[in-house]
Image: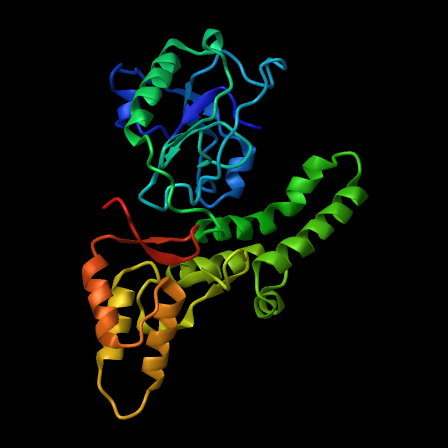
Length: 314
């Protein structure tokens, strides 16, 4: 519950801003929320940013009105059945979702009744209802079961920002701030990074950030429903991103190579196919037939478990 009175990063070309009613979006300069600067997509923002005011007030100015709601932004649209139309001023981060769609569900984050909406937001609301009717019956087919690689970068930067954040939380009690920060920091470290990495980088958030940023195309979680991140050394050995369909093609090609004995490369290929798909086959020709049939429908989702999945609507 933290969405304020203005939108930003609006995809103005989207249908909900253009039909059946044309929405006029006018931006003004607004102080960049301090919290945004602790995120990967916010660290380079300036002192002000362009925002579009869509409500007459928010929870800070009108306690009875309260705050709107944002959805997690980093992995909201990493599947074909989801899209983001706008973010809005909030305390969660610069790409948190104020307006978005997942399957036949539409996320409308602002809390204002029509009397507290601007005329342009009223038009957007009407257009959004018009738009979502297109997806009647199209159930979401990807469920978020783990965090994604951009969230990982945010977690690294959060580790760096914790001392300043907790000073703000407990401005009159430095000892309490340090105590609470340390408890959270230890929990944050253990749930995000491997023991080996913690031993290597300690409490230095920027070292984690630089390491994972350099290897961002090989990041994965260790298992479903886990938030601990690792580098996939198998994908890295081939120099192919784990979200590039070429990785599956390469793995199948390796399995198709005829040798008298199973090699390390065969084992790597088998691990990759097992790790990044939800299907299993006994023979290389079965893998090839599946891949050729579905390659135009395959997409990669971090949030859905670091997997290649088949788009059922394509």
